[in-house]
Image 1 (cartoon, rainbow, N blue to C red):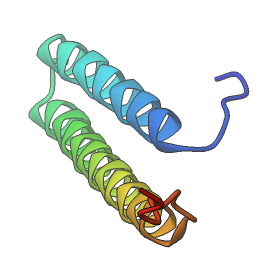
Image 2: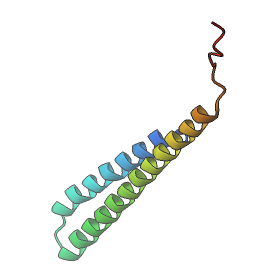
Image 3: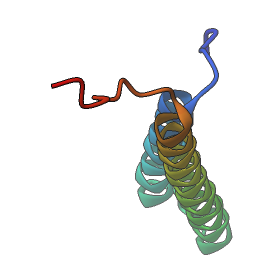
Length: 86
């Protein structure tokens, strides 16, 4: 996995990577001869899906925090006011 910048997009990219790996594990599990091996791979796939969900939640939290911060900055920025010089 190459270098990625920090931020919401990288969390979503990482979540997609985990989901892709989980799918690979599920595909491999189909070809396992023993139920123990199949079960182990499916358990790992479920764990990766869980991690992907956590990353997506984290991305959402960062997005909401960024929106809240932008609103605070917008509310506190100097505004041009009409002073009624008619």
